[in-house]
Structures are given as structure tokens and as C-alpha cells.
Image: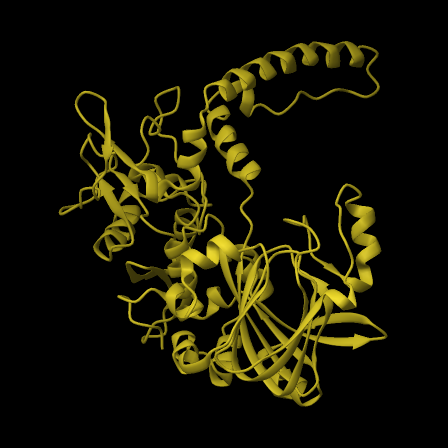
Length: 460
């Protein structure tokens, strides 16, 4: 059972360490083992996941076609690991193979739990909000029988491991092998990583620099991105991993630049075709070179308009939102005005915190989509799934624009869109800003051609 909403989940996760001190001294800098101690049962209860939940969630993994079409956070899947001569191999399995695989000595890895286990959708959303993490938070579970585990490797993301049942022995490097690695790597494939990223200054694991710990129920382990580690279960182990997915500043910025540039037709055009057998092909390429020169001038002019505050606003929108007064001066913004009657096409709607979704069967057997955030939960019909997927990517938007978010060329009708948006507004998952004085981000609502320009997705 999740901790009460009035309590911060991050406080429970890190107790007795102060979150501020953890961020300053440890987050993605150096590993930290936090013993459960007297708070162990509280930590276990806060995440409330056991073998029965593991099995139940596995039955809700969508088939491959469904996952490819609908999963906003990756494809949830269940796989087993086996080791052979230092190599580690993975194979996907089905829910009804769990007990057989466990008895056969395999480690089971469950990816994407936040998609198929609703309580973990709320966990991911709450932690993203409480820590203002601009990437996704994903939840994994690892189930291991005696002496099974993972070979030496490092991950590209910082993680928390919460031990729920049994014990697991970990060896990890005292510090990351590099800051913000571009990809994960097994030690057995380390040379392949070096060839793929020759510019990366990476050091291999050294025995003298490894730390040995045994996680017991309620213990938490933080591993920064790039930390070499392996793990071996005791008699039995069930744990979850919270992955704080990367959101590089380069990607945040380029996404924002793309949104601005795409308001102009010349930037939406695909480079022209060139017949490879045409004698004038080279002349065509030279003409396009001139067009590219013009585009680079426009890009430089756009970049010159950006300020450090613009980048801060892209990263910390919720913390730095401001309201402009009648004189154009900035002042701390209050909550956007709530909608008390029917939503209108011109309403600007804002997702105040990250939205996550999963799906389930309603009591009457109808398939529904469940949307959660720290502010509430709501369910809508399966036909609204493309709209919900887009909402997790666009934190602010004009309500009428949502009619174009359907994969059907005809789009949604306004009646269909307004019904879903009103449900989300009533549940607190969306807020509306009707007052001209209330702005999510100053001078950012419209693009150069007067159309509404949504802010880039940074969480979800």
C-alpha cells in the first residue's frame, strides 16, 4: 500500500538521509547504501509489491502488437537471464512460465511495471514531481532464486534498488566509470562499447575499488549512471529498481528549437529529390546548399534570442512559472483558474505534474485507460488512448488542438475530446488557464505565426 498522499514518497525512500543532502552529495555522483533499520517495514509497505503482484502484473503485459502501438513508456515485458561462460543471455517469457523459470534457477526481469501495475504509475509520477525530475521514472522488478543474479555491467541511468523480499549480495564500484555514459555495457561486451564510443573515457572495474554489501528487506541502494556492479541472490530475492531516465539538456533544447522552426514551411520541407542519373544533379545540390545557408542564418538568429532563463524554464517549468501583470512585470504565479463549466476549444490546459497511464478491465469487462498523477486518478474509454498518449508528451496545449491527435485522418470530434478533457479536469489531472494574466511560461503561448505552440515534453 502506498504511503499517504500527505507524506512525501522521497522522504520514505531515503530515510534517514535528508533528500537535500542526498541530492547535493550523492545523486548520480557516488553510490549509497541506505539500511532499512527501524524504517525497513515502512519502506517495504510504501512500495507494496510481492510475488502475487508480480504474477498478476505479468498477466497484464500486452501482446507485442498492442505494446508497440500503445505503450508511452516503452514495451512492458518479462524476461529471464542465464549466464554461460561469463556471457549473459536474455529471453522473453510469458506469465504462465514464471514459476517454472524460477524453479529452473533463472533470474526474472520485469520491465515497464509502471505501465501495467497502476500503483507504480503513481510511484513514478510522485517521485518525478517531488524531485522535479525532467525525464521519465520507470519501474523494474527482479526476481531471483538462490545464487542467481546479474553479471558485471553498468547502466546509462541512475537507479534506486529497493529490496523487498530475501537478500541479494551486490558488488559495485566506489565511483562511476564515467559521467553520463551514452549507453549501458556488460563487462563481457566492454570492448564493443569502446569501439562504439571511442571518445568516451571509461575505466573498467578494478577489484580494489569494489564495495561489497548485502541488501536485506527494506534496504535501498543508489547507483549512479556508469557504476560497475553485479548482484547475486541469497536463498531468494525480490526487489524493484527505480530508473530515472535521462533527459539530456541537448535534447530538451533541440526539441524546443524544432517546435519553433516547424512553424515555418521551409523548415517543414523534406530536402528535394535528386535523380542520381541526372546530369544536372550536382547543380541541384548546389542550389540547395544556398537554401541550407539561409536556414543556418535563421537558426543562429533563433539561438541568439535564447537566454539562460529560457533554458531554466524548459527544465523547471513548475518551479519557475510566473504571471505577468498589467504592466508586463513578472510576479509569482498562483494556480491557474479552474474550469467550472464546459471546456471550450480556446481554453489553454496545463498538466501541472507528469501524467502516467496504464490500462485495465472495468467491472463490466470493458477495457479502459487509467490515468494517474500526484493530484488524482481517472479512467476513460480505450478509444481515447491516442489522446492520452499525447497528453503525456505535451504538458500545455489549446483544448481545440486535441481534435487532431487521433491517428484517424478525420481526427476526433470536439464532443469526444471535450468529454475526456472534462473528466481529467474534474479529477485534478489537468488545470485550465482562462485568465489572460495567468501564463504557464511568459511569452511562450504562441508561435511566430500566431498559432498555439505547446511546450516540450520533459516528463511523462
